[in-house]
Length: 189
Length: 311
Image 1 (spheres, helix red, strand yellow):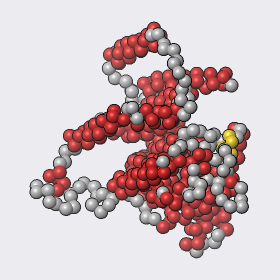
Image 2 (cartoon, chains in turn yellow, cyan):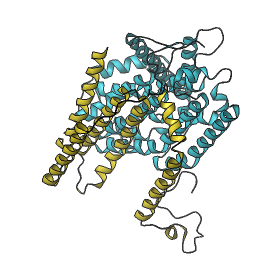
Image 3 (tube, chains in turn yellow, green):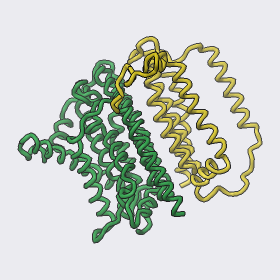
Image 4 (cartoon, helix red, strand yellow):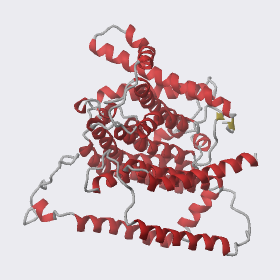
């Protein structure tokens, strides 16, 4: 059994690393995005193997969703039409290579040289419930502060990026009903 | 109800067979309903799954010029796999393939994987119509997914567990569908949506020459079409432990009730297709976020208050 676990762990680790490298090797936006997704999925399942099923599977969920949306943005933001035309996935090669090698060496050295802590105590019987209690108990203040900050960031970003203001929608006196929008809404506006 | 026992991996074949049978039954029912409305003979509808499978298996598989075949086929073949992985956590009476402690999150992950799979099917074909279909699906997905996620939250909160066996057991004596009707309806909408059926067909719409399906032929088309019906069947099966009391019911054993309830819900999901208008992706976004999401959040609040009140 433990041999199987070892095989699964090393296979997932290999998939994670190889597909991460493929992100820079392949010549299409879609392949690069989904190679990255595959890498994250493999990491998610490694987390599952560390007996953190909730964190692992949520990682897979979020990364698949994120990459599905990111592929759209990647294609949209490229000046050329990269549809199925091959294109290189790297730019500023030398600087990028130097930065990534340096980062790898620093992180790798840290992982190898640091003195790993010894486990104190035992993991909770239900780690998912323990995680939830930690987030919603002692860390509740952090969560309560972070959520509005994140929402404010999103709303602020959209407001700054959108060229239309409320005066475009509702008129100079803000009394035009329904507002003038480029696309109709689905609930009768 | 008795505790669920995890069965060996060889039983996955039975799960796959049941899923295929439900999917085929859904195809037949859909054909019969069409035959009835259009006054056609019913015989061909009965054999449609077999006929269509035989036809597509013999059909030559073609691909457009410089299609991204790898991504295209991953997308097309993946739908059936996602549906199978969904039912892997659904208990059939007292047996389950994987008694995962976070089964609800697992199901959610699989339905998010459908985002990627449908978009890849649209992208890989190197065809404008397919690509439009893929983008339409993502636009619909952004609208239906969050309400669906919060609909999945309600039973999990009520049962204080993400494990499907425990959620099913927590529904004695009152099924969750009775006191979480909003969550149930939104869940069903989500299932119809990730199966790209009924009101959510713009990604495969005739106005874009079949959209995601436009360039699919032969076994590739078979896998995508079978995958859509399998996802619908898997969604119906998953609703049984989530909302419909699992294997609870008089006379029959648990596994039979699970099958009966799955079949009944699947029939409703197939039937409802011809009674709802097709939604435009850009309009449905507002429906999803302004109507469905608040409605299902209020549902979650009600459930949370009831659970807190019970102590």
